[in-house]
Length: 177
Image 1 (cartoon, helix red, strand yellow):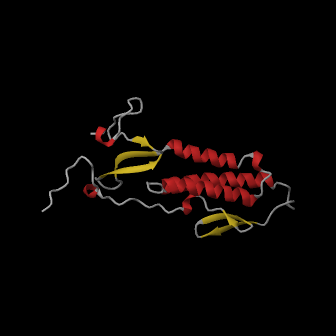
Image 2: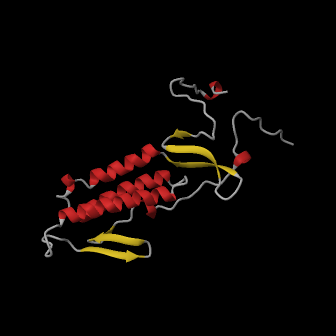
Image 3: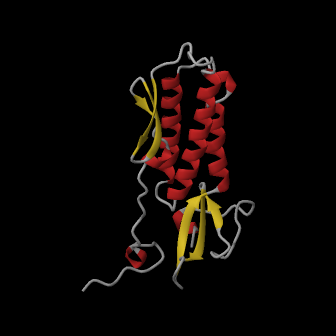
């Protein structure tokens, strides 16, 4: 079936598993599970544990002690770009809770970074115009017009089920007429 398409299987990379066990493909964990509260089963795609660990490590790297020479708005902008790019890739799966978890991690790391950089007593020498305010979405950091948005700012858009309407090369086309 694959030869006419010019494809071949690599035995060292190929593994046959049941969809209920799930598998990881291109950073997504794909698995069939029962929908909570019903008896129906659906296929869910979520970011893999490795992908989540990867973005958390990137956030950790951007908020290390060695980055304290950077200004706060530079750090926030860098975090926003990384988190938005990662979230745009994973927005087509079941990702809302994962985005929230990653944002929580980033927010805590940023809070620790700010506390460590500006811990000069009550007068806060060199402290930029920092605003930590409560918005409709919770606490947010803002500095010099740059606001920390995180991964949750990317909307999750699920694919519509198209099932039998997707053409495949191995099913014969219906005869015209």
